[in-house]
Amino acid sequence: EAGVTQFPSHSVIEKGQTVTLRCDPISGHDNLYWYRRVMGKEIKFLLHFVKESKQDESGMPNNRFLAERTGGTYSTLKVQPAELEDSGVYFCASSQEMVETQYFGPGTRLLVL
Amino acid sequence: DQQVKQNSPSLSVQEGRISILNCDYTNSMFDYFLWYKKYPAEGPTFLISISSIKDKNEDGRFTVFLNKSAKHLSLHIVPSQPGDSAVYFCAASPFGNEKLTFGTGTRLTIIP
Image (cartoon, rainbow over all chains, first blue to last red; front, top):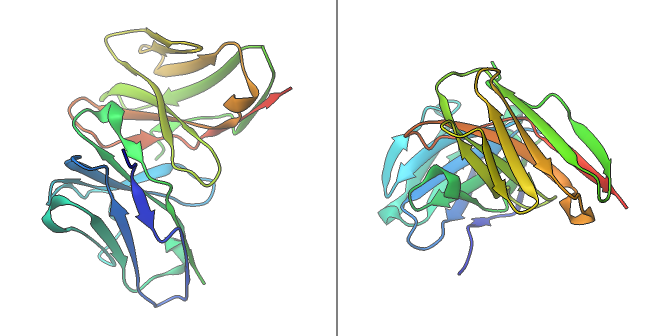
């Protein structure tokens, strides 16, 4: 069974540009989460989808971040326009039901110059 | 306002000995606690969990202890092996809410 996949693995962009991150959850997982880790700090929750609906987006930093989950399958996280403080590792996770079974992807390393 | 704290950024332990990683939390609503392990360039991997109705959960070499009155949990690894070298994250969640709140992680190094 394939795990959670994320694309790209790395992205380097300039301040003001737009970047779109993609996450493909484990097949059949209705729950999809986005988290972010800024260098050396804790992993912070961004939002949670149940199928195509946003269940909780309380962690989204501001309106420059837009997350979508088309048809309840893959998800995208767009940052527009990117700022320096958006740099970090963006993790996606998916689960069937219980909180203990969140499976994480390898992350996308975003560097905004 | 950090609700889950791991005050030791790093820990070195001799192979075969016990590794003890600590975690403190401040939010009384947290009801479910987890430990994740992370290797470089990989995502966190679930290791072990405990709910607030228990004070201990064991899985092979890994045991998690929860002290609700002190708002403290710990992960014991016995015996420690070189493959245990990784960053360990403590995480917590309120009951019925799948949003995880993580600590900053502890880098464990097992010395052969």
